[in-house]
Length: 335
Image (cartoon, rainbow, N blue to C red):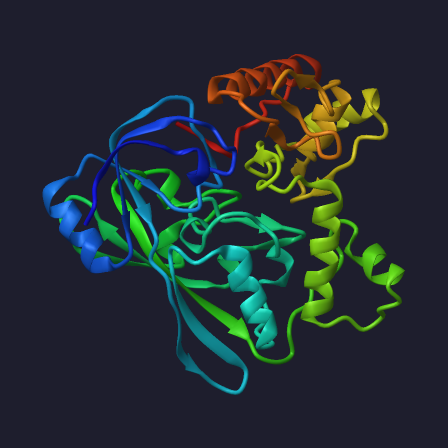
């Protein structure tokens, strides 16, 4: 195992932030990971680097998880049960499933990052959350080096949330995620966003899972920057959920405010709309700013620092708090 010193993490995070790891090692197997943890427990884990904003150099040993592999555990006429190692690219895994007609993840196409990070923030898009297909998460307990299995219920999934962002944060390293997907009679979800419009533009009236995936890829590519070209981490903020009373007050002032009914007493407001209404969409400050086509996405156009982008995020939060009395919560992990 080769531990390197003073390694730039620019290519290991999708924001393309150039900070250094004092020490760095890439692990390719569970065996290697366990051996490292016998010697070092003060570690910083990085996989696809898709849900983090690095604002400083990392003093701890940085472990890059490069664990690969997909296995079919069992299947029946209706379902297939898969276990996927943490280092597999998420979108590549989704496309692999679609190629085999395994349904359930098609709405989550083109989300950046690796499989191991999907349960941490319970990734979601276009009316689907990954929690609906996860059966269990396997993780290595850093302190003991033991493998621990978290059932779906034990993961305590919520909106962009899980036990791994709360009481289990920093205590475990996710090594694999297991899924239950459908092989037939797929539950198609086309009602969210512009999916139906995209399908109609292609004269598709009876879509299959590949049609839905293709539509979502097309929609995302039309409005979201490719992290390989412009540094970003996808959606930077969570869509806030507010009370019905609060919503009614806002609606009287902003009649056109878009919203989604969560329950009789709670309403979800698109964070992108709030940011756009606050004048930040497309705003550029030198090497960083808010993307011109999607206000939820903060971007690094070149050599911005993590602190630059974090300060912009705080400015957005303060403005929205002042204008709408809404606390806009950051989805990305600030390091």
